[in-house]
Length: 559
Image 1 (cartoon, one colour):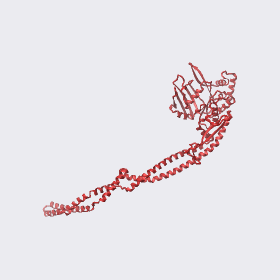
Image 2: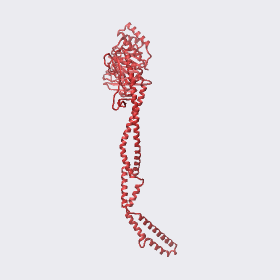
Image 3: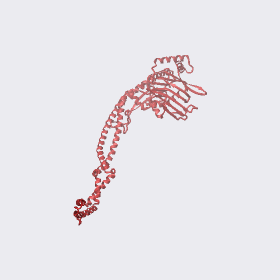
Image 4: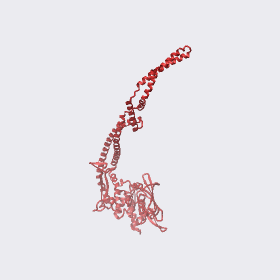
């Protein structure tokens, strides 16, 4: 509901503030008093267009502020309109975009008289009204859950499909690389051993020459080096008895001769192991070249190449797992799609039955508002879509979390006229009265907390005015209603009566709004009955209207 409306420098309004109450608020006043400006002000804080000529002459800007309540939450909406039409929007002092305000305000007020703010004229809401009226909201929750699960499954399926497709392309490269690495038969430490062997093979000729010279000097020369040491030891032995130190020198010569004999044996044995093997040299060089290629392609070292080989081997085993998971995901998605499609079909069948009941009930209410010739219809349709999620009998349809139905109200206001979309019916009082009838039927299911009716009494009087007044009064039992009227039958039923008037001040016209006391209400209703000249008869009739309304007045709603 709306608690308060403040307006500054908007058209004929210099400054005013209105407090609204729960239940039925009626606004009356002479033509040109400023009632339409108040409707414009409400439209502005609901996100409506700001015409450039709305700002009061001589003012730099206009300000409209409204305080709304929804449950235990309160929002203060302020809109500042500059000369020229530029505006700024704030909700609870935080700047917001126009679209944000429009989306939020749909929950607060449904303004009848300006189509921009009539939720019932927005086709997207018609299916929601039908489901609420029919009691299908629990089924809606089920289908919404299935829909979201299906969307999530399709997203996962797409990701897995792309991954498997990419994996198949990568797998061919991986298999080639794995084959190359496995064929290389890499072994830890092999490169170092081959490097040492290469050096030995490359210098085998020089090494044999050195070993041959060593062997010759130690064994075949005459005299050989060990032989010379043996001869010197024998000569020194002649003098060993003269001095113990000479005996030790002789022993060392003999030991050196033994060491040289052993050295000669080892050199000869090692020389026997050294071969001038050109074939083996070529093999080692070829293997080292292969290892160098492997290193260059797979990480720079043999250890990294071996790690790459092991990783590719592991990936080869998991690629089959990914394909298996893809198959499983396809099956899961297919089951969800089938379940979702069946739910769509079942929900649609229930809606088809309920749509007729809703249309007949609305027709009955409108007939009670003296629109007996009206015909009403809620049409359900489905839109085929090549890649739709709902699949029925081999055909796919556009759908969402509400199913695959599109609902739209159609109406013919007069006999002989074709049914047309509700959004295209005639404007003015006919629209407002139609909306009143629809709202009466759907009041229990409509989440909007405040209804504003402008022009609802256009073109009606007498008994019809009484019926409209009763309908509005009944509607105000469950929500706040604001009604701008010139009919006494409607005004008398208001729980809170506001008078809009205009005065001259300093050569300027100014509008004002004030709540009326019981006595003032009687005067105002008498004016609505008789015009400018209030008579005793009109005062008496006004009293009778107020008394009759008091007897049937409901407890105010919309608090």
